[in-house]
Length: 218
Ligand SMILES: *[C@@H]1O[C@H](CO)[C@@H](O)[C@H](O)[C@H]1NC(C)=O
Ligand SMILES: *[C@@H]1O[C@H](CO)[C@@H](O)[C@H](O)[C@H]1NC(C)=O
Ligand SMILES: *[C@@H]1O[C@H](CO)[C@@H](O)[C@H](O)[C@H]1NC(C)=O
Image 1 (cartoon, rainbow, N blue to C red):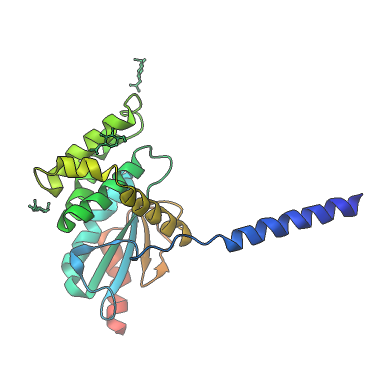
Image 2 (tube, rainbow, N blue to C red; image 1 turned 90 degrees about the vertical axis):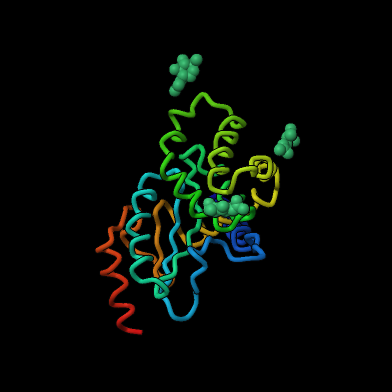
């Protein structure tokens, strides 16, 4: 009896495990992420990958010091932002999808839209949008996106929300973060290695402390 239980448990574990091992994540045609100002990502610069949720206050607070570092290090620092919608921020997936729509319609509007989200994110928190329909939230976010993407883009943005490709792109962003073990935002990798103090805003001095020694070693 007992051995039957053990055997079926083992069978369950084996079947369960092989199922996990076999599940291939969808491979996107292009690697995920928005490269700030098209800086060269490979070769001569320190690469920071930042996983940001546009609806996360700590992501918002960590962007200005990272931007200051970008200005300081210029071409010696490359930043790639991966949108990572946290499930407990109700509108985060819509916002991440809007970033993909912006990137598709007008590449140079992606970061301006991210900054607009950071500026206005409190309007899209869970409580103030509790009674709003999904359609009306998408409408509000579309109008915000138009400010970055360009006037006359409203109908293109709205059909972007009907385009299954932008949905797929936002899902890939999420899965990419999961595959790298991202559990919250902001989450940073420097030259591929996770920063242990991820999850809270890193200040400019913190970035200098990390990047200066790496550039000295090059
Ligand atoms: C949502 O609407 C209900 C009914 O009108 C109202 O009682 C409630 O306070 C509203 N909640 C929020 C968070 O606005
Ligand atoms: C694209 O976005 C940038 C940044 O928001 C903006 O300055 C530019 O005018 C936009 N392009 C068009 C064609 O609207
Ligand atoms: C998006 O799809 C919905 C449902 O299929 C449709 O009612 C709506 O008109 C579409 N909107 C745009 C802008 O294409």
